[in-house]
Length: 367
Image (tube, rainbow, N blue to C red; front, side):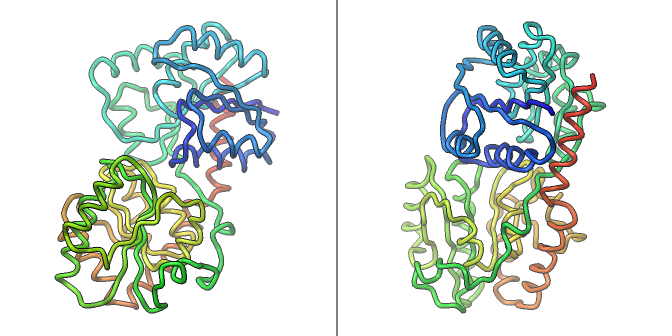
C-alpha cells in the first residue's frame, strides 16, 4: 500500500483540480492511500474531504520556500507519505527541496501547461533535475516542452488524461438545458465551458460567431458556461456585436453533463491547452469537437480520430467555416460523433490513465 500526497497551490475548480480528483477516485482501487495538501482552498478541498481524504493547508510562498519544504517534510513523516505528486512548478520545487529534510519521499510532477520557461528557470530546473524521480506530461507536446525547459527526458512519461465513459453515457433526453433556455429541439447548440480568462480565447470565439452569422442562415445558439475575470467584458462584446440572440451566458455550472447532453457540438477556443478534460469529457458524452490547433489538442482531434476539426487560433474565418460544416452537414456531424466515442474508448479512458500513473508511482518509489 502506497501513501501518496497530492500537493497543489490552489485547490479550485479547473482542469488540474479535475485531474487530481480523478486520480484520487480511481487509484483508490489500486492500493493507493490518498492525502492532500494545498496553499489556497477551494472546491477541490470540499470534494476530497467528501471522499474521506485527509487534507492539510500549508503555506507555499514561493518556489524556494525552505520553511514550506521543512513543513512538507514533517507532514510527509506524520502521514508516512511515500510519494508527493505535484501539479505546478512552485509546489514541485518545494517538494524537491523537502527531500533534503525527509530522505524517504519520492516526487512525481505532472506538467499541465505547455509554456516555455525563462533562462533562470531553465537553469534551476537543470540544477534540481537530479532530485526528480518521475515526470508526467499529459500530451506529446508537453514532454517536448519539459525537455526544452531543462528536464531530462529519460524520466518523462506521456500519459493522456482520461475519463470514465460510463459516467458520461446517457441519452440526450436526460438534459434539461434546452428547456431551461427555451430552445427548440432542432436548434443547433454549441457549448464552450471555459473560464473567462485571456488564454481561453473567448474574444476570438465571439468574433467567430459574428462571422458565422454572415456565412449561414441555419439557426444556432452558442452556450457559454463558466466564470472568470473577463466575463463582463465578453458580455459587453456580445452586446456590441449585436449577438444577444445567438450567445447565452450560464455562469459557473456544476451540471456539466447536463450541458453536454443538451448540446450538438463542443468548441474549444484556447490559446494554449495541455490536454483538456473538457474536450474529452464532451467527446465521451457524444459530442464532436472543434478545437484550436495548439499544444495537446492535436493529440485528441486529428484525421485518425475523426472526432472533429482543428482550427487556427485567433482566426475567426477558420473557426466560422469549421462550425458551418457541422451546421450544414448532418452526416459529417454524425460521423464525428461516432469518432468521438471511439477515440475516448481507445486513447482517453480513465482506467488506462490510472494504470499508467500507478506504474509511474512504482518507478519513482523504486529509485
